[in-house]
Image 1 (cartoon, rainbow, N blue to C red):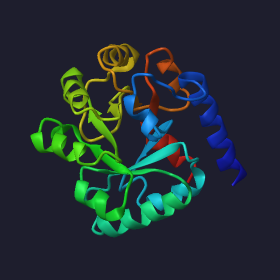
Image 2: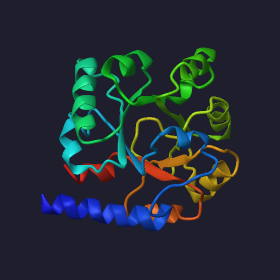
Image 3: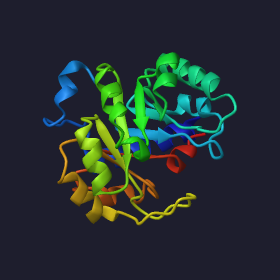
Image 4: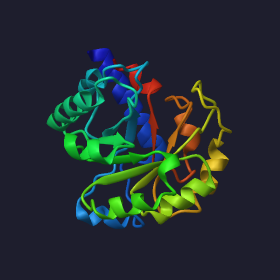
Length: 220
């Protein structure tokens, strides 16, 4: 348990160095309404983290979870359990790509996959849920444009560096991230190929925080 605690402490130091001790942004207009933007997001993965509940005891309340597990046989049941246990620890949970499940599971919001960004019904749904936290997956300037128009709370840009995922995309790198952050008013989180050793390369890119899975698996 002490090793796990030390790992989280070390990651926190890296986040403090790279993104600052606390994220503040005058451009985030909804901050006064009580929204709490996390320092980082854990992206769940069915193969690498079959039961995301096991990681909750290792996380601090300023790290949120984006529940994917798209093909899980019992996705609804697992979502319910995850949200319940996470809320007991003050941890926010966003459901990826499923507004209905987010409502049923009483999650804190929804993570919007990039392929959903251009649809009109998404904007109506977002406006109908003023108390939810919304993030969106983006991979380029066009998708960021759509995400900005939706007036979401944050975008998660990927991949920053090369990953082992099935779908291979061109890496953004620090320069690519800098271009994105300069073209939008919404906070951007970095995802893809990041470790506690490479996260500091994002300093001064304007990125608000990071998202990942591999770095958090070290806590399990």
